[in-house]
Image (cartoon, rainbow, N blue to C red; front, side):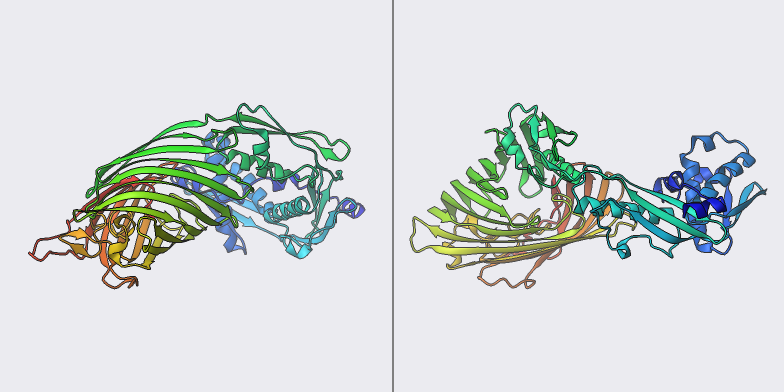
Length: 598
């Protein structure tokens, strides 16, 4: 083939040409159009290919906006010469190697008329691979014989070939290159991909250095490979990402040495984070007042990533202090043990309680998105309802299953989530009191990313039931309540249900539904329109939708890098009155907190 091309005298190396990103679209460049329109406006027409006019014009605008050379041009003829080089290179990137351009200036506008000529097609596609390397199915490549010779397709096929080799083989280096040549006599092209020879190697025992408090054996659990595994460079990047996600390290440097006896030495050098953190948070609800949270964390208290979290909450209706010790990789890599304890005093309208609890939860990742959990908690409490004090000694065993398929926990914009939990309770003080509390919640998020304000439609539904005993025998703190900032906005905390003397009774069942339209007005500000509905039922069977109380409102979001700060203003749509004709529900409720409502 090389002798043939030599006789034609038109062999062309394409490496430099195909690396020029002229066909890429740039929204930042479009923002500069008013400036470009004022400075040497142009019209670009490609004969017989009107569908390419817009793409070529946008490529030219991009190059103009990003080029210091163009900014220094002060005459239309200079701009026309600049454009000429850009347009012809773009045409070649689309397979038009014999294109010609006629440019003229009319009434202060540059007019470019392109005669594209023949569009070159690939006549021969050749893969030159070392012995032992099997090519992928050529039908899966972005380019093939008979297709136009487009730069974007050539580069995409190169990446596909590279990924095939990385996935299937253990090469020390994957040095893949391409050459392209064209024959102007018949518009044919010859494309060759060449993979340089490289030894097949394995990982040696990795070395972990520059650690001060984290034990190296703990960090080895996060490596995506073991000694003796097939050497793959992507495993190094996966390992680096996993290590950074432990939140114990601020920097991870990876050094890869030359192969020794078929094994590649790898060294990880670390810079540890400060493992201690003070934290504070605040919120406000017009019905229950302000909330203050203070806490302290140690993320490596026993040198193997164990997280000790101590937190206290101060609010008008609740005060508590709790401690939690999270032990990752407990007995197996995908398992986490959480030991927890809490002292609390609550005084909502429905009841007053003082309690102490201690317990544990064991969770296991069944897959990347699915987690199962089981646990045991002992709670001793004294509750005062309607001036009647009752002591409880509850032993309960929560079982849960959670699927998190969203892209973010605090500000999801796509995906869905499903949570199921069932908790058998036994009252040790009253042997005949046993009941089971079951809850199910689901949410889904859909975003129109190419629309104005990137609207996100968010939908949430939840329901639950308590079976086994009458409502009066269920401790008030463990009944279902609906209403408030995390439930049905517009109604006072816990009041969307049966009331006695305007105070909530709680329920054996509940249902909730919420719908939000979230608009991102700027990079930092968002607007939310929402409606919530729900009810706490005295019976065991939730009558989802029946008797729902509905609230609606709007909210502002200040979008931080961590999570949105939320301000919601809501009003009840179904205002209630008591037996004496007095209004039960206030006209407006205000909520301030961190993170989306759901």
